[in-house]
Length: 306
Image 1 (cartoon, one colour):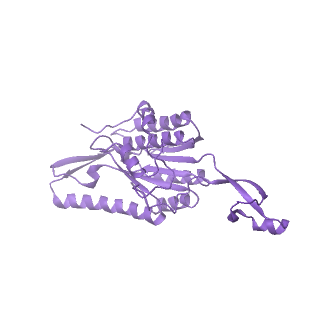
Image 2: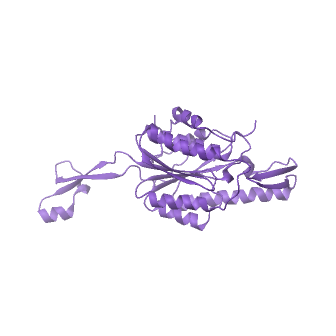
Image 3: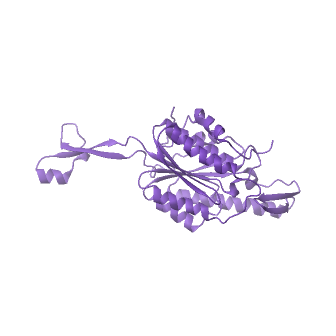
């Protein structure tokens, strides 16, 4: 069966019932695939200052405001409440490099499905969802909002960009990935959760710098989307590889070609993983040959939610 090339808004809306069994919030227990990778980075919900009041028996001494206590000559504590919600910003890559797939779906479809699962999970948790969806020519910003209507706005833009992908789409430079990250850096002020869903094609030092800027005051989860043919080419003879209007004919019976192809992808994959480890950013791998929901639940299974 050929890979599904496109996804509709109705397809993404139907994923609402499958956004279960995982949470985008931290504190993954030992069984989760992300356990140990990001406990020092992901902040969970923040705290809002509520009031200053007299110290009472049973108060945590760590909450004492020593400056106020010294000034007023009585012990005072600062009282906080947990933030009512958290803003989750989805960056969804729909560039022509994503319009490739050998099994089940293209990378662009898998990314759209992952975004839908994330959006519906955020809505179910009562948080606000925002998005930056981009292709090779266009970048759309959807501002933070709550509820199913907010998720639908996000997914309609993703579906629209996805529908515009075709084999005749002109190749552009890789600047759109960095443009999207730059917009995210401007938009995500503090304590947002930024979820980047991309194949990371064209990532460079500027990309890493922008991710570092975002991570300084926010949390990031990277969803790395790839296709099985990127990991290994089967020896099936002469094939034509396509990316937009570009065509390249290769003979996959060549052992050196297959080794070079596999080694190049393995190096890119390891570079992404190493950067994630260095920045304490969890990296979730999503392969196009498997339902993204299964892969995301496996990675985030530690924090089960209804």
